[in-house]
Length: 115
Image (cartoon, rainbow, N blue to C red; front, side, top):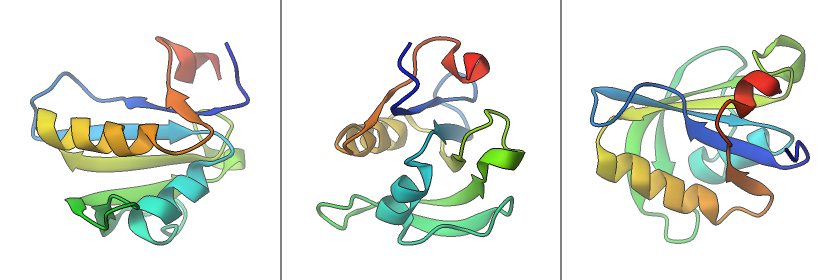
């Protein structure tokens, strides 16, 4: 496993669902939030945000976002969570945008726990 790259994955249950939680962990978590949300929310507070495709400025979802600094996160790294609507379309669109960010990759099974 390569722990140099920032990882992302669906960390809630299977889709479709009411809410889907997307977890992002690693050095670029703050950068990801800045690209998608326009800023980094206050640490450990959920904030209502518009998640946008940074290339097209298209709004992907109105959602909740939060940030956890490495010293106080479940993974021991900077970590972000996006609590989005749990439709397959919303999550797939978000994963498509995340895949465009350099230094990011989908997490392998069990990788959040290993980190």
